Amino acid sequence: MGRCAIVGGRTDFRPARLSGSIMTPAIWKATLGALSIAATISPALSNDTAAELAVGGLQFTRSGSVTMKSELLQISLARVSVRYEFANNGTAPVPLTIAFPLPDIDLSEGQNIAFPSSDPVNFVDFATKIDGVPTSFKIDQRAFVGKDDVTSLLKELNLPVLPIGARQFRTQDLTEATRSKLVNRGLLMQMGSDERGRPLYETAWLVKTAVLREQEFPTNRSVTVEHVYRPSVGSNSDTILRKALRQNKAMSNEFERYRKEYCVTDSFLSQVDKIAGGGQASKAPIQERRVSYVLKTGANWAGPIKNFRLVIDKPAKDQLVSFCAGNLKQSPDGALDFSAADFVPDRDIKLLFVGRF
Image (cartoon, rainbow, N blue to C red; front, top):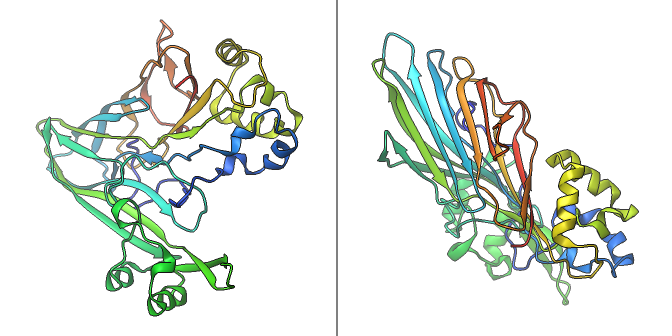
């Protein structure tokens, strides 16, 4: 979301790499031992899962005269759109570099990530408009090991910065000379060995991607900036909120984490029970989906957002959504419509959808 942080700043995210098979996400790792014991409750928790990317919004270089008059953020499982209106309160036009930072991708992690697109560069299908007109942009993508920029080495070896989609490769197919260069620079790390005792390697660099554009803010009119993209949706084929699981003592810590992270209420749990029923079948009739959005990303604007509005698309029948609204106020009719004046975000947005999908 478009709080302002210095251009090039990263979103608060440590995602996982795309591997050949779907593996258990971190949120379930601590409970796998308990699940193996209580397999009659739900062995499906370790399968058919994906972790979401926490995507943020516009970031600007610091300006003391450009204010955000309004922001409308609309979120669904299929689409995220944001409309900003800016005003230059100074006496001269202000040129700024605008950045839309895509999530950092840490290839050293061993889980599966829900990439919205197989495009190894624009992996959220990002598009933007200025005053209603589609606008071109540049995408800068780089690879890092620690603080070292290793992008040039990957280009020298004709390897992709982000190995997904058509650019995905297997480390065992690399030549010995290529592997040695990558290992020596820390881009590959050994992860066990094969049946013949030969070492196996996994990619170990961090991918940073940002959409960049130069924008001038005139003094005589407001400027509208819009962007739209496909969200990364995390998923589980079951949910810890299902009654049989949340009442399992072995799952209590994970259940409490969910309650805190998504502000799950007793009323919400009652609605979950109505959809799921009280059975303890190993295959749950309900699932979960998760969408994250980096809202709290700094304070580079000249003052708070004058008018902020968040609209969450109404879930389908037999679907529920829970999240922590923070200092946002819900509309009087109870719709998933939240707003605030002179808004300074106090938290990021993490939406939890539970139900039948």
